[in-house]
Length: 195
Length: 175
Image 1: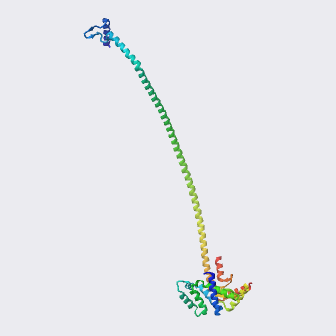
Image 2 (image 1 turned 180 degrees about the vertical axis):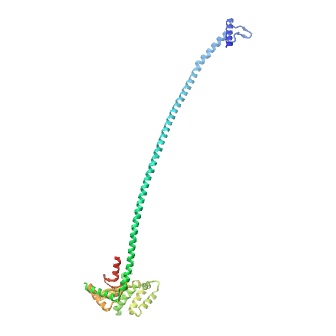
Image 3 (image 1 turned 120 degrees about the vertical axis):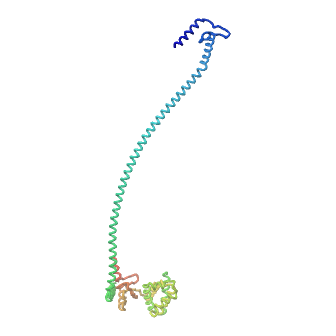
């Protein structure tokens, strides 16, 4: 810091001490100030710089400004798009969350419905089995009664068959000639008496 | 066999027997033969079997009836059997009997008993049936052991049944 202050003081002393134009020698204008150019060059350089900066301001600045405006607009647009996308994503996320909630509710409903159906099937199955059991028992009872009836009927038929055969044999054995003649005479008498 | 053909055969047999002057005898013999024919399965099968030659069937008839019936009866039965009408022989003979009875203005009374009727019983039975039906009858008695006992008489469509067989059947149906 002290070195820089010393240099500036030195430069000020040179400018004050010279106080006029820089001498022209065989090496051109030579200034003794290591920092400031000669006055003419300074003026011309300053004017040229002003012109350059003016031209730059007139012709380049609108372009630059428009560039930055466009960039700002583009960035804003992208920000808006991003915000819209974010909003849409949040909306979609909300919808998915809602759908997930719906799925959970639907799953619960389906579970409940399946449980109800299973319960109903069980109840119905038990009722049907009970009814079939009752029907089977009723049929079995009817079959037993019918079988008993059939056995009774078969027994009666068998007895009737044997009785018939026995009757035929007994009657044929007891019908001797006298009985035959009696039957014939009775027939003749009865037919002769009828008119 | 159609009724017309049966009647044709019966008419032929009737005319032959009447021409021979043995109608009553032939009619009676044919009636008895018809009843035996109906009750004898093997005889009926032999007489109706077309595989048995006609002359063989006729020889059987002559063996069966020869010496037991008049030659006219034997020849008439032989003719019917030989012409292949053995299956209709009972119907032809029944028609002949009806025709013979009608010729004498009589109706046929077929009486079946388990034991043979005496002549006296036949006369009294005929009189009783005539009294019951109001018709003049010619009695055809058939011994049929299947009736077991008693009598069954058939006059036209009228049947008077007082047989032990029928009573047993009634008893069976009750049982």
